[in-house]
Length: 132
Image 1 (cartoon, rainbow, N blue to C red):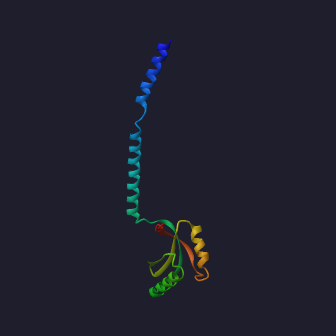
Image 2: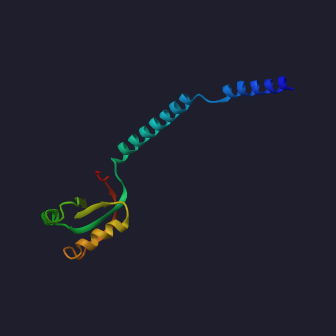
Image 3: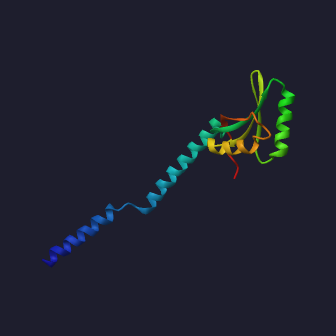
């Protein structure tokens, strides 16, 4: 009986040793998968210029380019921590400010600047990633 138990134990440990995966191969496979994901992310950012969907606050639009630049300069002098973008949407020059992932974040800025820009409103836009 001992002999049979010994053989069963020996066989189990023998087959168990071969059935276990090499721990190094698991970490190698993980490294390969991580690198593949990094490459996909890099490719995505090349195609989208790093931009994603989000929100900005439109503070000005008119056909007068010099007026739009004046509004942008005035905004940046008072709110230097918020980026301002000039865009041309025929026939108007538009000034949008901020880069917000959520509408709630954009709304916080809108409330802050509403006194200076009473006609400002939130718009969907492509936004640039924030630098941390």
